[in-house]
Length: 256
Image (cartoon, rainbow, N blue to C red; front, side, top):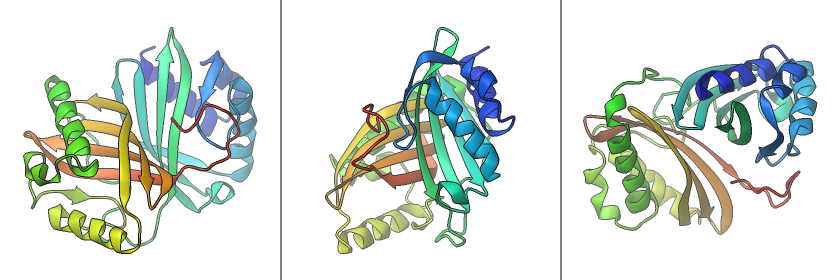
């Protein structure tokens, strides 16, 4: 199986078939877990699956992108009350090695009923195009993360996006550059200033580029998992899942 096929098979075994034995055969013996609430190793995964089945939670995957040995799933979890909210938006990132899934990162966020832009957290285009521009698009997005979100050269924002064409799926932010600037100002007024934004994982396939970043916001550690869609050399659309990083975890692997 390709890395993408392997990861989709694992996700199906865990969240659709609820088959711990099938799932355990797809991961390595030293499977590394970064979800703060799940213990590392195969045991953590196999213990989780019965809880998912008992809770009645269901998963719908909207996007799957892969680059090399890394695979990203963009999903919605319904009936997820046992895991924190009725509906959760999620990014799951997997690393594959020697035909097994060997490492997992994720971020989860409750989905609100109303968003500023009117868009949902997971809707929008899903087709992967422009695979021949993967590296170019990845460099563009990482430049945007460094200069704009990281603050290295925020004045260069229009090098990366058309101010009028930036479709937003973050539930608290409006469209365009104006929406992004208004959100940054609102966060700052609430004391939620970002003082660190460090990319830790980046996965690109064609017109989609995913970046997971370790951040400090309002003096506290946060994880930002972002997905951007690029068209004709400009960023045109954005999805994200944002969550605080807890101080206590079920393992010593850290969030990243």
